[in-house]
Amino acid sequence: MSEYGVTAGSIPLVADTWDDLSEQMATASHALAGQGVGGLPPSVQAAASAFLTTWSTYAAESSTLADGFAKALRTTSAVYDRSDSLSEAELHRLDGRLGPER
Image 1 (cartoon, rainbow, N blue to C red):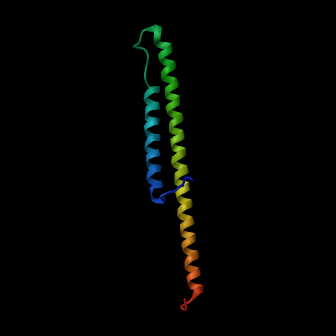
Image 2: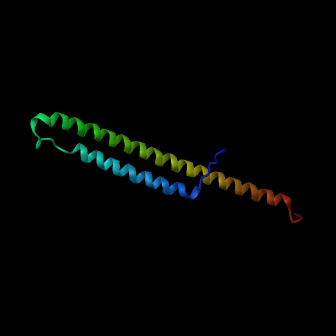
Image 3: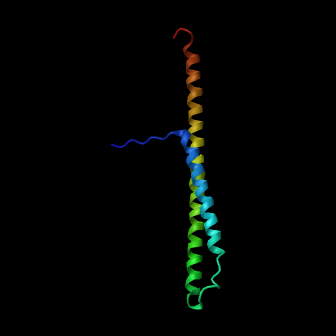
């Protein structure tokens, strides 16, 4: 049986890594889209243009996906933080009900 564990403090760091990847892919998308094919022989310009357009689109989609992962991880981190805070508050309330006799 496998076990699953999460170190809550690492989630924001991983989200930052996904943000970095999103930025890199957006940069790549813009760079590919901005490349001209005019310096190439006419016989390959159409293929080169299609290549650049396709890969620019793939990079833009990858950027969007990475951004989505980063947002999802931040949401998860917030849920974990909230859950921890609620648990802590309930434990403090329980301690108060037990009184000094415990």
